[in-house]
Length: 236
Image 1 (cartoon, rainbow, N blue to C red):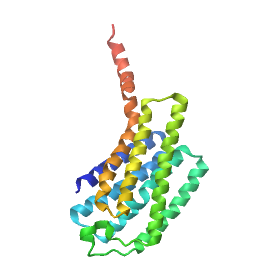
Image 2 (image 1 turned 90 degrees about the horizontal axis):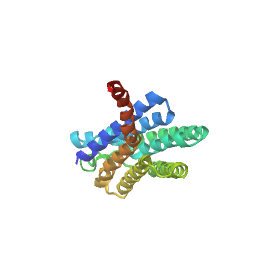
Image 3 (image 1 turned 90 degrees about the vertical axis):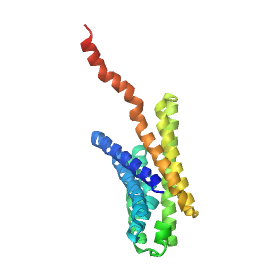
């Protein structure tokens, strides 16, 4: 079914556009890293769309596994570290992730693809070595733990300092979206490939909703500020 990967692709591109806009306005590093993460998500979903629409080939299978299956969650987590952790910790994580990305790229490039299985199994026709599986699992588990842990910490700190506020719904949405995406990955590794985007598409939509929530939360106030001068001018 091409609809769910297409939804995931569009939601990822929307998140990337928001991250690019925020980085251009504020120049904060975590927005730049999240821009990269959402583009990685978009590449993975785009590979799925292209494979379902025009057929899979070895290049698409490898590119999907490199982006959507291996790196996406870890770069999302790296953005969380740049937002919440001390700068030296985030920079150390960046160096480690770049090394891990290069290792994953080398392992995936060397992995054989069964041409006969491509038509029925899609990207799962890629033969994954134990080293590649271990690296992929490590990146996804650690990435999910950092994103969810960062969301829980942000929520705890916000409630402790200011009490419960509607803006903290964004934190819950991001945590829920990340867990849903991770759940789809677990099902995939258990051999249930058909359920991947059944979890991935709504998961990325939840990330988009959480990413938009702070802006939507302030929209009525900003609208009121924008219209106040106009109302003042019309007042005799």
